Structure formats: structure tokens, C-alpha cells
Image (cartoon, rainbow, N blue to C red; front, side, top):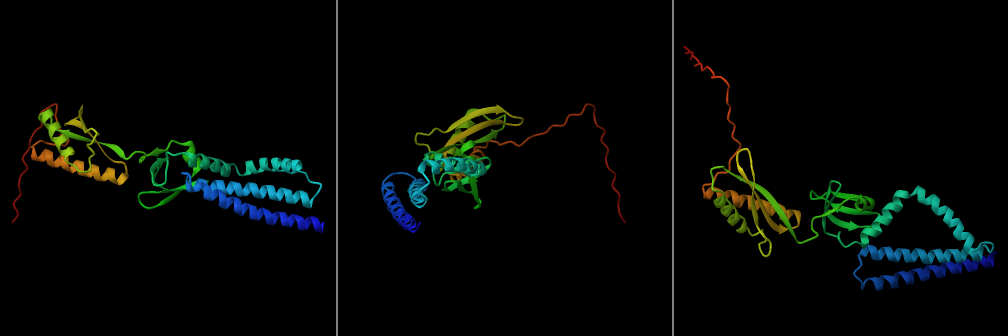
Length: 271
């Protein structure tokens, strides 16, 4: 078997060379495309696996002449069923990762929320994705979770609508209050007014106030939303105070069925 062994070793060596050449050529070709880096690495890995599979199969047939490609493929088919059951979750995450990599909706740097996990996407791999939360913690999420559950992409667009509720007293003129609130919101530099409406609607008769729904557009990143909300709330409060419009707090009136007797407490003098 020494001649067959020598030829098999040469085939393995040639397979290694072909694998390197094929992988490097494919990477150079994929760099000209707009595919994600993880997807480019996946195609290079699959190409290398295919070359090695073919080379090892040829070497095995040379080393063991009784083997045939058909028998090798049949054995691999039976083995793949057992491996599939044993590594079901791994293959599920792998396939989900491939589908996610082909999607364009979730990109590196996007802020997403899924199953209570919210943060910035820092890396998308084949089996898991890395999400950096706003407090700095890194969450490694299996891709099957992102694939099977609804994912909210907060930065899919550059602009995002924000809403706060503002209440005024019942004795205030509604139109005047609406104008004051609108002018205050319009004066904030974090509010986008070009082509994006600032909407102020009288929403409801609350227990102690008339509530306005104040809506405007700002940047889509979480820090931009928090900054804009802080600026708008401060500006509206300042404008209502300057206009003499009350922002009421809950009032409570106690009514008794019968008059209550009043008793004056007697003072005691100390020596």
C-alpha cells in the first residue's frame, strides 16, 4: 500500500494548495461586492470545506481501492442524520445566521430590541450576534432567537417620532395652551421641523387636567431621543410658566356625609 499511500499524501498536499488558492481568490472577488464581512468569510469557509471534502474523498479512494464515491456518500448520509439530531441547536443557529446575514434590515451599529434585550449590534457571526447594551454590557444572542422572534430595529430610519403627555388646568384657554406648547417645541434645536410635522392634540379630560399629546420628530438613536425629550419637556414647562398657564397636580376633595364636630385642643402651660 506504500505507493497508494504516497499518492494519497500528494493528493492531500495538492488539496491544501488548491484550498488556499480558491479561498484567497474568492475573498478578492467578494471584496468588490457589498456583502457583509461575515458573509464573505462564510463563503470562503464553505469553499474551503468543499475543496477539502473532494480532496479527502479522492485520497480515500486511492488509499482504499474498495471504496467508491457512492459508498462514501451513503456513509456520510447516515452519519449526517445522527450528527443532525445531536447538534440540532447548533445547525439551527447556523442556518438562522446565514439568513440574518443576507438581510439588510439589521446592520452593524443598529439599535435593536428583541425579547427584552436592547442595545447596539456590534457583531453578526454565523451562530450568534453580539449586542452591546446601553449600560456597556455585552449580550451574546443565539441567531435562532433573532430569527424566530420579532426584532425592533430602532435605527432603521434616521428619524424617529417621540410623544409626551402634557396637562393644563381646566380653566386655561385650550387654543392658547396649544400655541404656547407648539412654539416651545418648535424652538428646540433637537426637533426636526423640515418636512416633519409637530403635532399637538387635546387627548382627554383627565382627573385634574386637560391632557395634550405632544408629538415631534428627532434622531433615531436612543441618546438622541432622550436628549430631545429632556429639551422639549424643559422648554414646554418654561413656556407655560412664563405664560401663566398652570400645569396642575392631582387635587383631592374630601366630602363627608355628616358635619364633623370640631374640638379645640387645650393648651397646657409648663412651669
